[in-house]
Amino acid sequence: MLTIVLFEPEIPPNTGNIIRLCANTGFRLHIIEPMGFTWDDKRLRRARLGEAELAG
Image 1 (cartoon, rainbow, N blue to C red):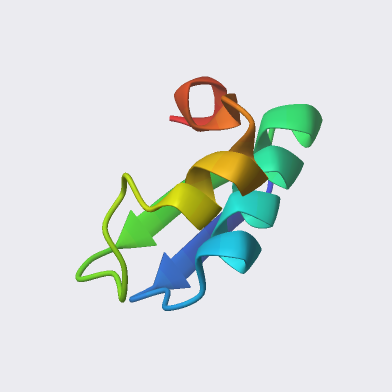
Image 2: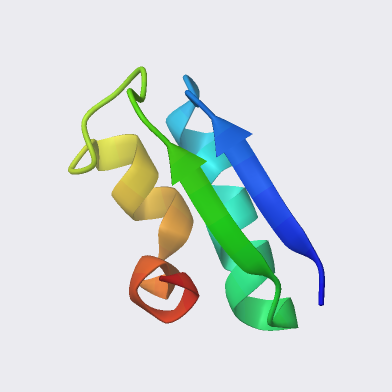
């Protein structure tokens, strides 16, 4: 199984796309804080489309 690690991500849409990738492929995802945005950032919510809960 592949594990993807995001170290202090700064771009919400890219983070959301990677969350979606992990949710759809079964890859594990680790996000190392601090992030350059808040988790509730509007752009992240739009990009992740609810997959954050699946990837967690």
